Length: 268
Image (cartoon, rainbow, N blue to C red; front, side):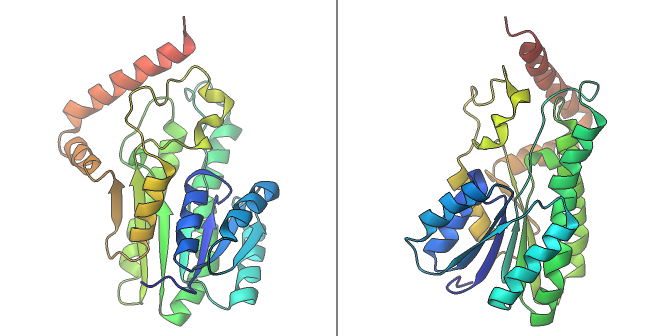
């Protein structure tokens, strides 16, 4: 797909993967719609995009609020008349055992990470179907295939996203509208700035990605016929191994991340 003059909506666009993705689309001449809760951060990103062709539009919106999402979609369609790419990227994670987290903290992650994607998809998909073109990119995680201690509720939201996406992917066959899930391993973003990650040695192993690396894959996904792109692609082997030999892999995953929980709770 040539992205020049295409209309691209990016949720969670105020920082991290969303910001990096917005810049890459803007460099390709797309009209970029920046969606997030923090207007001041969106203004900073918009300023960066001013150096590139195409226009940008700010939509301050909490994707966990269906009415705000509907208002956002109306604003975009009134401005541009169409949407060519929807990147459902907004999300957050709270680290801690299920017994430690409040019900509200668990529900909040599902409301943003999963239902936010549902609200945006439902708001934009009818227009894409009407124009017989468009692509939805859902940013999930390798955690959509591994239940990890300490982020069980986050994994649940990404499991749900992947399952929903697979069903919708098949429904869209022959409509001209595509859908691709991007599932990265750990990414160095403000996602981990939440206070719950204090004492969490998140990047000490070196097994993590930059936002720019994931953004490149999102660009690729926006023109892909595949259901899921795993980043890095080598991680696909780990997913296959876990799904094929769960009795062997699950204890290893459990032990590794339980040790991280113990270290986090007892930093000394």
